[in-house]
Image 1 (cartoon, one colour):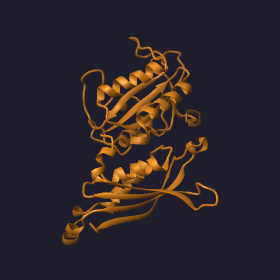
Image 2: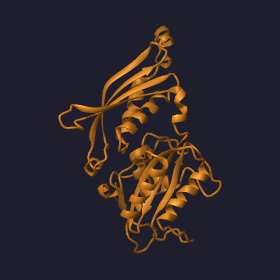
Image 3: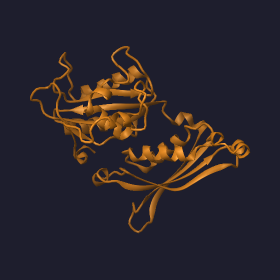
Image 4: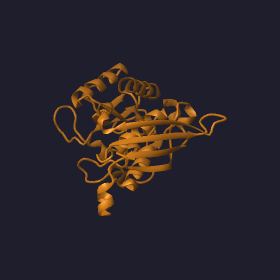
Length: 289
């Protein structure tokens, strides 16, 4: 198919890189897209509904990239290509993603990936958002939990971290809270069991006291668009709407996502809160990565 749509030089600021300082500052990445698609219907009808809406697509890519926290530009490029393929009219997507001035004496460093609709096996079927929290040795436990999740599930999108006041825990220490996006082919209850295993490895012992201090919480907040009250998992997690320490970091990486039952996006839920939420303060993420 010779038809294609090209977007050149899309510039986005995001957190990207391996070094500790790169986890703290926004850096520019530049994105070029080549989308293979059949444009004959749009050519005949002059109707935007018959073509790929590249304005909406690039806005979605900007929002996803701005909220991403990847270590590698390879992973970000793969994510951008997946985003392009959510429109079934795009048969293949070629993405060139560059990081200007990543090397001394070089204009930029870039990766180029091509993905097709037939590459479905490359994409994990489930997009999951996890709430992470700890108020017992939280730096160590959160860092090791992120490492365990990365080892098991691959690339993660990680929100900024927040220091949050304990709720119902008396004189307990403050929490560190954040949110993580991962992809997995595990079904819901298998994933839930695996997360409990990560908690146990960090010394989590559960009791009837839901407000007790804890070494680690890993709570499934969203699992695709699933809505369920069966078994040990309630989805979407009620804390998204009820607890700012969950909603604020989740909005950092899932703002454009529609809440499955609230008839609005996560960002719109966040907008109902004050810009500065009492008891939820940014935390120095450098210690966690």
